[in-house]
Length: 500
Image 1 (cartoon, rainbow, N blue to C red):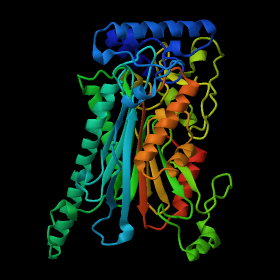
Image 2 (image 1 turned 60 degrees about the vertical axis):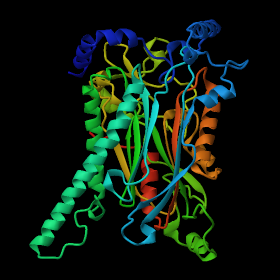
Image 3 (image 1 turned 90 degrees about the horizontal axis):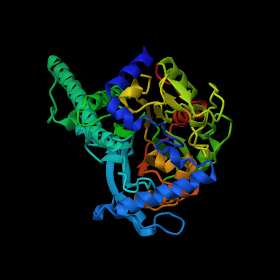
């Protein structure tokens, strides 16, 4: 029984629940006091902020020095800079089928990453719970393979969960890829031996191993996430009862990019219609060919045609939240109840039919999103429907099963943004891509994304979330597959399907 399982977990870890049983208000991670409903509550917030800063000032520890604020109560510029970490310059790598000898099979990639620690007035020294991982080449012993991931922790031990996932998920996945490719190679050599064929030089070297096909790579990605989630539950040093992390990753293998998503972080592709490269424009003949061929036209699910040369945002992941009808049904079947904070506290009537919200296109300005609760308790209150960790929430359907999408990298794929929700909470997918298009390199794009995100947080909230992004600029000579692009676009617009 899902509800009973949730209760049993509560009894088992009563000391942890006593700290976190209170209902989180507003957006995920916002304390109840930070959702302002009245003038008196604003005054309470100001008093709590003054008290927190006074306590920090009296701590006698340089690391606990209260941050400098301007007259509006926001961090001054030098304090914001102190909270930013990551790449000092953009890096470059060559991915794809490097052993084929065909230039079209190669993908030139430039990339960078930045993370900015958030600011919480009630907890000015709160750790950054975001983390990221980059392996720009030779991931899983593959010459042209790479792996990029962003993790967004939540709960009292969210930073520990994010670090654990950063350490273990890539390691597990790389080992599984290597093992499967080695097995395929052993099978190939056995067949050659039986047929008395001459084995090539370095037949046992990883550079000679066969690539995984699309299904094989998806399978190892799924297995890696599930194993990482189980290991996190078993890790005694990390208490994940009411803490966990999202995981959004992109693996490059055999000329494909495979996006795995657990939670509400996001991967967005900047796709140039007609395949015009980042550096320069196509010849006039190619322009004519693009405009004259009907099968080169990109049309969305509503019949809108995109102009050749325009760069459009295509989501490669779907936020896993109770806003999604398919996820709500799955959670409720597992024994969860879905409520907003106002519904839980009696300010609004209970309505089981939560309106679908097109995250990535629409901005949730109100911030009172539906959350996941046990039937008889006001926890865990997660604003996402899947995560790594969150062992109590797992009893009611919040699991670590990833949704996975694969796409061949082609010349129209120019920009890839992998980010925590600190970036896109108030920025649409298209706005993120537009910002990157205006930049001359990935690090510049990361910087501008952080600046734009931070500015929007100040417009809507008293605090700012942790903000993390990886930006990749891609160049490929592989011809576009309009049918594949249309399929991915229409899937995003029509809504994803949850695995059973």
